[in-house]
Length: 242
Length: 309
Image (tube, rainbow over all chains, first blue to last red; front, side):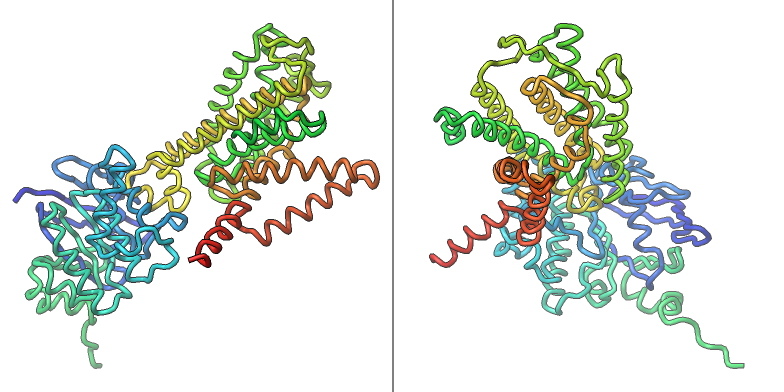
């Protein structure tokens, strides 16, 4: 499979903190990759760098053979990078379908076409009962689904999901998981940050682990679960007894 | 629309006609402000600068160079749009109250500039347009013609607003207003969209300024570039309903007659009493109808619709 995303020696320093420190990895087209790590590991900073929300201190991001390092978010979006936000960011004064129309307009010439596409996506995402609803009536689970629907409506090459399962009920986690798993079939490559590990472990075939700004492991889920460095990062080292 | 024409043609008294005409003008100006303030979330308290630029440009061209206001108003509108673009590029990086204050300050700069550039603007003494009625001079003998002109102005700004609302661009403006980060992640260039909204708004506001000058035939910096004027531009849409096309029209048709009425009842007696009452009414409306008159009407209509079912 062809390479879609190449991250080379990516570094971002905040003051004296190396939030992302010399990260290298490659994502192939059609992959579904999990990205895990303890809080503060640098996952969100990595996302912000790839999506253009912040500029790297050093390193390069290459998307589909084109260097996109330091591009503004709207340019990165046009180049095919979509993202969700950890805390959903809906347009509060627009109803559910109009929230998705904004994204759908990127690849549709008229508002009417974008609206039809948005409706199709919302139906796929089980939000057909809420097309004209105001944002205020949505539960956390539905807001997260809307967040994912907006990202998919951009018809991206690559989507970065940030904790889309947090706060969902087990049945919501199941339906969201199958939605995410269906995306490579739509031609969308996925990187997925998640703390709900059981959802991710059974869905992806590759997991990257970040700790203190660095990538400490990149392997299949079963191997990651047994990796001593990963376990150490999550649970800490044994206390030396004096 | 037909109701509006009817209002004018029925042949109301001269004072009534004055109120109607001013309502049209304020509705147009409030609609123009609303494109930036209501749709793009660029709350400006400096729109008097654009109004003044429009009024002064067409008037100076008429008085000093004999250019008809029919051409001068477009020159003023383009000038205002350019200033609007520059202002947005500089100030749009400021957020919330800081942006608002920067627009207020920018308008003061324009006002003080107009006061001191006496050779061109006439300074504090003002600028008089010779009242020779002719269509070419855009000076008319009858108020009915002015009323029609203001009505056209209102309708044009309304149509522009509606066109933006239903377009791709309208969606982008709403998205940026509600969440800039999310809109940007959806491929919308926030600075470009904001600048476009401010330019359109400034352009239409300046046209209103030219029409105002042609109606009153006199202008000085305190009456066309005052902060009070800027507040009024913002107040009418806020009262009528921000980010809706009908809101500013409703607001203008409530506020204009109200202030004229209060002025004629109380203006002669206790000085300033009409303004105090006016202020009190505004506060009460804002308190009880936070989404404006149009929002309150919508709620009322939906509620009625629900209970009918």
